[in-house]
Length: 421
Image 1: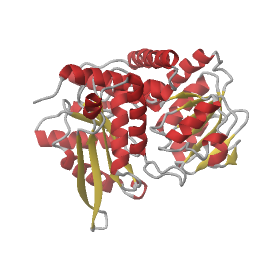
Image 2 (image 1 turned 180 degrees about the horizontal axis):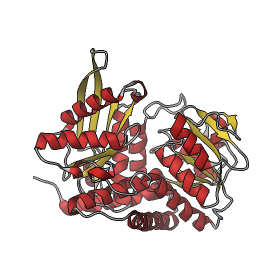
Image 3 (image 1 turned 180 degrees about the vertical axis):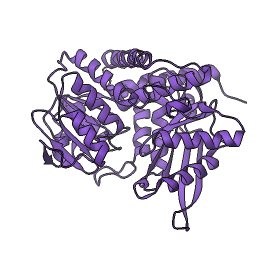
């Protein structure tokens, strides 16, 4: 998110630009190329008036940023959150560009958001807001132009409303305008768990690289939403011990391992993890400082910074969230010898299966779930190997190595395409 600690006067977009410059320097990119790929191509701010359930009109602010279309249509989620800012959306769009290039899918980066608190809005209010926002950004989106997807506090239902609004405006159904849709509207099997599954595959790869056994490995998960919960479930099934989990309501801990299926069931029923039986309550700071093999920050940006990174005792930090470690946090973790799986690699499973969904929509031919899982595993493991190779050959930190891979591919594409007119 755009807010920062008192010691770090840097927001998410500044962090994204900082990481770009570090990777571009390592690649020795020419200034002309940097100027063409560093900044967003389009930035749209829209006013979103919504009639609330009590009859009054309330105005929200919305954004859609297209960072790059060099390698293909722009691609990126839409989030509903009180802390959404333009800089945050620009940062997320920038990261999406490099993320798509890291897993080598033919998309560029985009992102959208509305500054709102969906937890205090009814379903009717959310639908009216979504449709109005879709109408406002409609000139920018389309299956060959810019393809939204779910993000923080948006879901398959949100995508269905966007798809319907867009299709009604065009006069015929266009399922490929969004991904992350319900399966009955052209969504892909395996999409809901794709981000968490991608996190799992990269953690598996990291453990193999470090000669660590995944079975019995202790895991702490900050953020028990879609990505965090699915990653925890898959790690639990693989024999790892998930000893600590948090969400926005609190943190729970059991040194012998939490019963993840039951915890997911309770979260689905109650909306929170706090009060889970056979677990003790701990603080968010204690979770980040937990002695464990794997720490998965799966919440929002800037969770690990220059103030609390010194307390991290994990061997592997797997960034299921976007931008959870700030540049100052990066330097501290690097000095401590923590193996980082950077966000644009670790959480790229979501956009990878979004690409699979888009392909299926365009072909009108759909795959079995196991086909999706197999394709995703191949993509994630190949991307991990590509990043690791750069990391080992150049001695660059894993984040810089991932950015070098993604930025290098975008730079190559823009150099070949040239500039028009």
